[in-house]
Image (cartoon, each protein chain N blue to C red):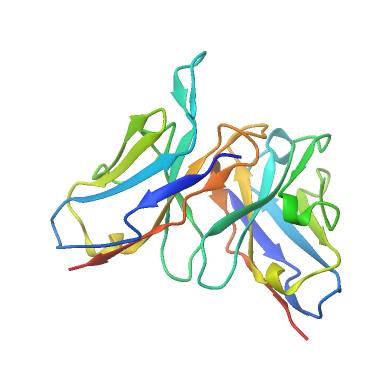
Length: 113
Length: 121
């Protein structure tokens, strides 16, 4: 099974500043035949279900603000929020869907400094 | 609008059973795999089970194999999770989620609000 590890566990950033969350998989989630990374990012606000932000490691879901971006390939990935807004306070999870069972990172709690 | 609405959660004693339902609307239900994901209190997300669009293939997390059964009724646009021999560590919010394709190796693009299962004596 693929293990997903996020860093840091928690993060506090000033409003308007950049936030960066890392995600590492225990094995590559890049399918060579399609050249796609099977990696998604979700946002979960308190008391709400998760919301899909990014898939294929860097494709933004429809309606997601462009301050959210995903990057990386193989085993190392990053979610970046270019200019933190108050409504971005949440827990963020990465997920690999390269193989069953799919697996999530432990989550990164993002707050305001 | 795509919507998922879970129901069936509640308080049950260890060893008991519960059946969760997820009513889907706004998309062609049979075209998509569906997944259950759970979240224990104060913890992260844990994949539980996935079923293919036509219901012919099912997949389970190891700790629920043999105890949980995922199924679907495409004529009713409804997903189910039959949970037997429940344990205290099954306590969680259970989310129903739509896969982006026919599965099983998918991301989940729509999530329900969740239903709470509490296993306690």
